[in-house]
Length: 91
Image 1: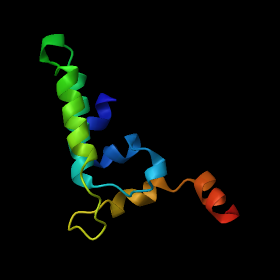
Image 2 (image 1 turned 180 degrees about the vertical axis):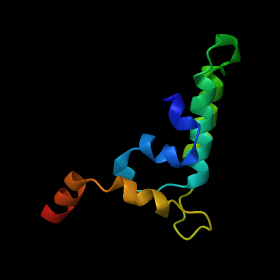
Image 3 (image 1 turned 120 degrees about the vertical axis):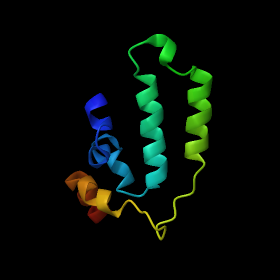
């Protein structure tokens, strides 16, 4: 997972494709930062699980506003999943 944290353009590779690009970019960046802290080699440098839960709870409470100045549109093309498209067409 750590190679994905080095470049923001790689973040899309670790996001659930079922979101289809519908998520706040700021939340994605914050979640990646929390995950990176959890992957520190030295255990003493890692956050307490209670702090991780608090951070993730805060991130999850953020509202997704598609019209926001910074959107996830450039991520959405990476989430095109033929199985999802087929399922949507069958509905």
